[in-house]
Length: 310
Image: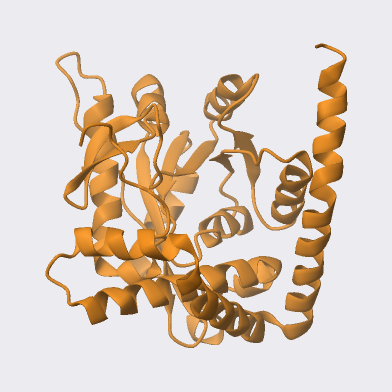
């Protein structure tokens, strides 16, 4: 059995090579097209093909359950635009460094806008001398907050579930290396130690918290019970550090608005420690508000609500 492990890993690497080559080829095409045209092409492709995938049925069911007051036409429009947003986000990956062109002195010249209040929240988070936690969701182009953090000196490590395919994992790391901060796997040997080490040295950790997590805490999300990863809440309880939410709103004309909340006032238990289930619910409420405001920019295509017996 021990001898088979290296063989299995080698075979997994070889099997992943064609997909990596395909992704590299698509990225080369996207770079040649430029950020705007590749974004438009990605939107057109996913909006056209998305309805043929089983995930489209999942998305329609999810939107109908979340917005029972909406007509069937409105539900389908939300899902179509959600496919478009997904395609744009994928096609924008090779251009993240170019897309994020925020100029605090003149926001009219670039693709990114940030309010004065959000700039103040960001600077306070960066300069308070403390570790911190940032949660986000699959909204707009959800990779841009990490680019912003790296560009303006906020040490941030993204917690992510690594791809099962080693070749794909290397590709993800390669894509992020030039424009974003560090990465910490949420699973595997040494994962907890690596994440804790970031906070121990005064850094910041961030995570997308809007997907199903089998061993998660049950919270109310969009009116239905959903299992949600409690990792950030547990870290907040242990380190007692500020917790902020960050999101991206996709605007017209290939522009984006970045927002960051002030520190959340999370519920605490009788001992004065952050209550983990209550904190997960509080963060989820923020995400729910974001999704209800711009439902067409969220990732409805996954099975988010999978609580046994619910």
